[in-house]
Image (tube, rainbow, N blue to C red; front, side):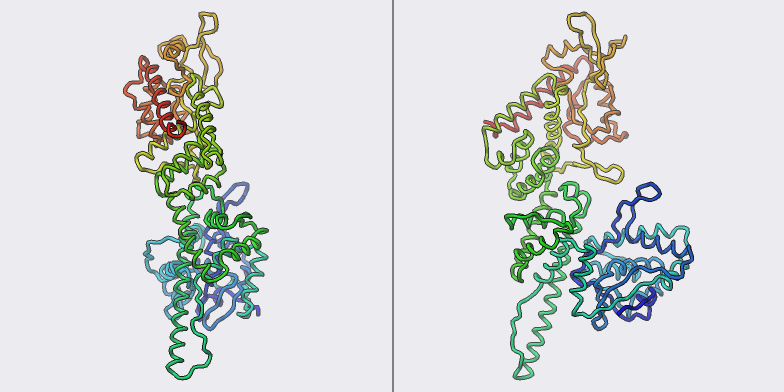
Length: 601
């Protein structure tokens, strides 16, 4: 049955029913911002703000009616169960909460003192909406994905209010915004839901698995079988048992749903996504790694073409009955805890971050190794250090000592050369090892290294935005021409230039040679953020030191503790610089060699 209704009749004071969000529905997403092209510019809008934008445009254009598509439901007593339309209905509640007085909210958004929109399973979502729509402060130690996007949607919609007559807007929404209220029999609800979501690719594999887990893991086998009772006492006992079982099932389902939403919220944190390189998968890497751990072949996927086959495979293998579902939900919980430990515990976070940032080993293999050894501090350290010298995954797990020795000898030899910076292969090794020394300095202090920095509201990788800084600038080195008593310099772009007439701030290449170093050796190089290059330019070392320790100046590289320790040398004056470079080279090479000793001897 299809009925045309305006919002006042759909939600309003004459609608004495509750809107119920079933367990299989996905979380609220209409507060999530996404990039859009508008007037030739890229902007960010959410579905909630786009909906309000369209309503305002319709109002300004004098449209007598504005349709927001249909709502598909089945009715069960006083409950209107939303098969399709959860996102729009919730957004309307949030919007009216912003526009209405407290008296109006009680009339439209509450019935008989109870909030009309029922998130029975996601209880924190229901409590949040009930609190803010009831004019109360919401206090909780949890911040689920639903709540995050509720708040985001409201903030974005508020921005659209500027310059608008809010009373007029409220009246237009209630009387002129229309929808089709489509009612189907409860028996057909599951089929209609699957059909609608199949057409719209509404649910990803992750979301289908969640629904199946909530249904199966919270279920119970019947422990009573009698259809006919012999007396009233027996009847009451069975009724009591049924009521108890129903209560237990709902409590379990609510518990599992809250747990799942906490995982979902964690994986949707931007810092977690960029660290694990998990992309846009709703549950990050959790279900993918759980699937691979329990299935020898086949890839996990959320792509529309793969959803059906992957879900069926996951269902048949891991959620086939109540017992299996409960056991595997507990295993999922433990796997999630492992992921969180890898991220939160400094030692594992730092080693994993380096391996993902610098090594050539596929990210999925790196993470798999860390999950398999998430309690073994030495194993993950060995893995990271060996990955930095291009040891392959198979060579690491098979403990190929000969290959490790050969690769370390080759790379250490390149790092020991006088001209590291000008050799592409040696330069890449220097990047990795100097970056590692900075990360390990944090590691030794028991603190997490910051692998990403915020730039224009995005998190960017330090390692991908890297630079090698010459402590003594290469443009301040006098280089003798072959077989001639003439000298030249090179600029920052390696172009040959004439030396300045004032040579007081210059050093002879021959002076470097006396200590078997050069301006391009590892002792004269520091890992820096690329954006700090222009700050240091071709300043002398003592001036660079002053810049680095001037806390009033913004530097992206100030969290680099190894870089800091080298700048902190007592005297970088011209007369001491070459000696400092020589000492730093010996120290860096000694640190690197010591870290690899147990793996190559």
